[in-house]
Image 1 (spheres, one colour):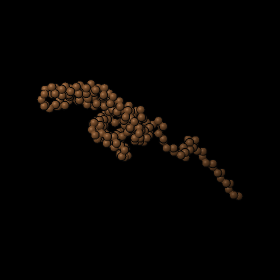
Image 2 (cartoon, rainbow, N blue to C red):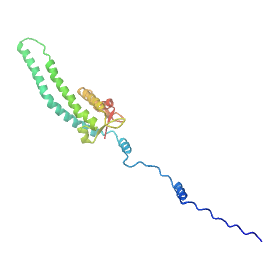
Image 3 (cartoon, rainbow, N blue to C red):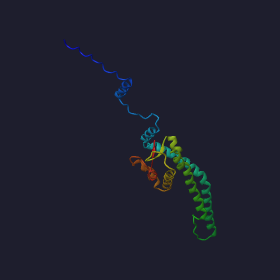
Image 4 (tube, rainbow, N blue to C red):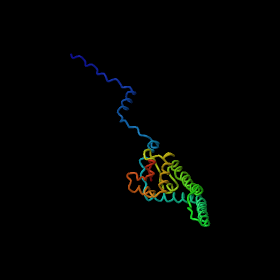
Length: 208
């Protein structure tokens, strides 16, 4: 007679913890994604969206800023210029009454001080209306109305006070000279950031 077949033993049950472990191992790994409101991601999007502003908006903003600055400088400087011209007229009238041929110098200590006051008003008001708002908010009144911003060309943040002051001084000094027009028109041919000379001096560009 044949020996009886040995009973086949069923495999030992796998603990439930091992089942869960295997299931976790079989699930695909989902890569971590940053939250939507991640400030670093928002900063990257903000920097990527910065583009040189259109020339029409820049011209409109510059006209607004020039009118505002000119009106304030004129209000401060008009009395000083009036006094300077009156002083020059008195010198010319005195020379005529003397009956002698004399040289009348238009620039003396009095007129130099008065015209210097006008120049000081131009620079100080320019700092308050141009450089300071540019460093604090990245925009002047004209640029705010036109939706423009002045940004650092590397960090795309608002420029520092030193850079904003340098930007204004270069623009203001060149504006007093004949080359100021060439400075403003330089952005027509500059690529890729459409910078004027005062932007190159401050390492900034106008975004919009």
